[in-house]
Length: 344
Image 1: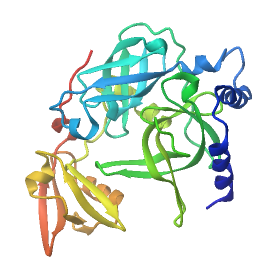
Image 2 (image 1 turned 60 degrees about the vertical axis):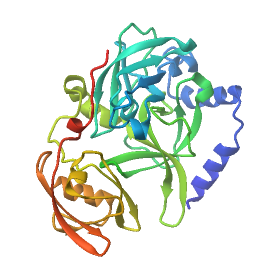
Image 3 (image 1 turned 120 degrees about the vertical axis):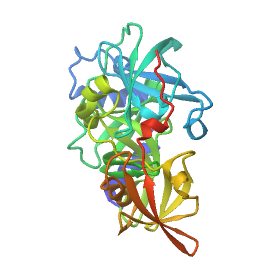
């Protein structure tokens, strides 16, 4: 493992976590890049990080896995009440509200849930007298850079973080992000949390806790995965007008898998999804897609998506015990399977 990482992470873990120490650290990181007239206080910057509370009906497709009461964070990014968060917090929600300082609650409208990137967008239904956080750039970061992570709750939630790197991330729910950001050490309140550069600008939105934020092939270190804010910039227009990214609709099979030493094992299938209809069951092994061997989770997704768009028939070969089954699966658009609702 790189010496810089051992030293910097050890320093972070041993640092005193008092409010005054954190304020001193924040001010020292921010003062070199932000004019005092532009940033009157750390609290003003962190005021843009709001709480997100979503209520999801019990019959929702994702209720079993994600729950019916979901809590996390979001970040105000313009003066008209536009808030970016992690999409799974608001997925299939029937009611969403944000929580401001002093526990003030404001209803919001769900503008977008983007399965392609993972972002969610909200719009407050009342005026928010809070300065928005400016968008920075998530590209060009160097491993070892010092960053900040903040969730709802002001300066008491802020923790220092070390940028561990940018790389591909494959999620078991048929999700692939080619430029995910990874940080260490682990931050527990990651859902929708703000990843903040020393300039005081937003560069990422918290998605997951992962066991391999650092992975050099020999040793791993746990941390967090963030969605890069440059991805949001690229699709923001689509999200505001269409509620999702534009472009072709990828075929969705309803498979939840785990990669074990290069072998892709089915751990769950979506209720009433294409994979279930085709007879795929937990315990099956995904051997091929499109007639070609599957080498990894990411490789499987790419070989599925290369066969067409949502609604097209996808060729998948699975191993059930000692038997090999070549299946033709009629895919769907995942949005059609979800119980998406309009919230206000």
